[in-house]
Every structure is written in structure tokens, then in C-alpha cells.
Length: 418
Image (cartoon, rainbow, N blue to C red):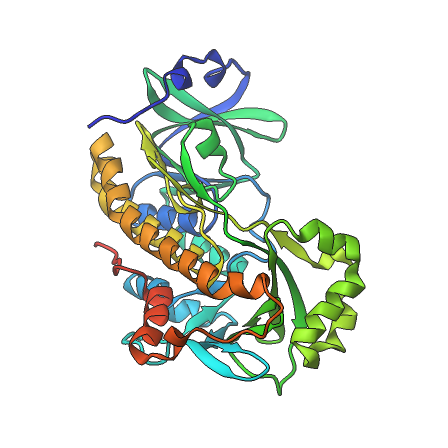
């Protein structure tokens, strides 16, 4: 099997520049990125005695407004690892359905309570707590090593094969050589850039402003979309807080910012009038996170010695909150396919291609589902001042169950091989 490695990638002398290396280490697998995909893959490999180093560029795992939705598909994976009971002991909330509410009507978009699973709900758990839980579990295995504050700058390439990475930490250069390097470093992946991977990109018709407001005991539970005239707000129940996503037309952030914070609060209150008093606590733009919504799929997820997974391989729209779950499913498939080659100290291109082959189709299907929802449900709201009327397909039982299954369980089940 061959792959279309850009000729200039390994001929460019800057790919292997000379630095004063503070220390060099070797490992079976070097994973760049301590998010859900990287952390779960590291745990799965370490459990099998495979030497793995997990590099995280930041000094901690706490990022505000990251994906906090753990879907039934991931909870079933945690159960297979014997970790679901311990995970559910962490403070969390359960979202059993997602509804769409307009001034005239309320329609259930996805009801998870009827799904055939031990976990018929979405677990709302801060991602930092999930990542701390996974990495603490991985640290029980001597073959696992976590390096925080490791800013990967370069790939090590020899004879057209990626042999590891170089990273900066503490003012010095460090080198890790590995049989396999995995890029799990998110939507702004450094390894995707260094490897010159080509992406197929789409531009969803929206961007998102994230912020939080206090939740009162009398508030409804679960998640919902609130639709007004030309406005859309997604609300996620986080126990004592609401996490709100104010969805705006693509490229509309600067205009909204120029109008001022008071105008934003007024706009939100028009859609969720019961939050008008709580919005007074929103008094600075620093409390609001802007997300430029993107969607893309890398054509080839691998080079010799290098594999991309999670958002590094496919950036997902926030529709359905499926990004973290597809990233973890990538990690499980990668561990299933690559554990034996790593133990044998030889990973072939065909092994890496097998990972993409198993994960590309479900990724394409869910991205197609997201595009459908964006165009048929969200875009008409954002481009019209007319009162939103939920599409008829949401009222058909046979179609109404489809979003719940796709969001909660994914396209194909993924299981941990023992």
C-alpha cells in the first residue's frame, strides 16, 4: 500500500533542524495531545503493557467550554474497561432528552430514554474531570508517561518515515523517538500542519458564542434549543449552571461585538425572557467564548509512522455534541488495530490505513447528518425573521428516533478488544 506523501515534506532540511537536545527518550507510541482521543488511546495501550508517552502542550487539562457531553457510546466503552461506575461517582448531570421550544410549541428532537443501553442519557461532566479521571487511571500502569507543557515543534523524519517528535519545554529542546506517533492535538492540530495533511473543508452557516448563567432549582432539566425570530439558543443543563450557546450567522461576530454587550443580553432575553435578571451577571466579554464553527475531513489520516485521530483528522460541527465521542471511538479502534503491531515493534502503512477505513464512513455519515440539521433546521432560523416552525420530519416517530440513535450511539458500535 502506498500513500501520497508530499515530496517536499521529507526533503525540506527544516524538518530535521539541529538543536541542542536536553534529553532524548524512546517509546513504542508517542501521542501528541491530551484531549479525549489522546488520553483514552494512551490508557488503552498502557493497559496492554505498550510503552506510551502522552504529550500535552498546556500545563493543565482545564479548558473552558470544551465538550462536556459523554454519550452512551462512550459510557459503554467505559463499562467495558470496568470504569463506568467510578466515572459516574464524579459530580454530573444526566440529559435524557433534547427538545426544541418555540413561542408556540415544544417538540422533542431526541429522546434517549428509550434507547437499548445501560446508559439511556447523555452524561454532562466537565471535560477536565473526565481527562483527569482517564489520565489518573493510566498512571496506574508503569508503561504510561504523561508530559505536561510539552510544546511539540517538529517531526523527526528519516528515510521518509516519521520517527518521533521534538518539543520545547522549560526553555530547552527534548526529543522522543517512537515506532508510532499519533496526532490527537485537536482542531488546530500542529501535527496535521507539520505533516502537510490535506483536508476537505466545509463552512457551516453559523458560529457560536458560549457563556454560562446560574440555574435555579425550578428550571427545567435536560437540554433544549430555544428558537425566536431569527435567533437560536442551545441550553445545556450542568447542574447549578446553564451552559448556553448563542448561535449566530457565520461571520456575524464582529458586528455583534460592535453593537455591545447590552445589545447581546437584550437579544438573548428576547428568546429566553425568564433569564433577563440572570443576564445582568454577564458584564464582560471575557465571560463569553467565541467558537468559529468548522467542519472538515482529512483525506489521508496517516503517513509512515504517523496517524491522526479525533479532531486532528476530522473537525466536527457542535451539532449534537458528538465530537468527543467520535474522538474516543477513533482511539478505541486505533488501539484495537495497532496494539499487536506495536507489540511486534512494527507498524505498517496497511495497519494505519485500516484505522481510517473503519472510522471514515461513520465520520462522513455523522457529518452529513450535522450538515442536514444545519441547512434544514438552523440556517432557516438565522436567515429569517419569521417565526420558526419545526420541520414535519421531527414529528414522525420513525424519523424522530433517528437523531437520538445517531447522537447517542453513533453509526456503528465500537467495542474494546481484550
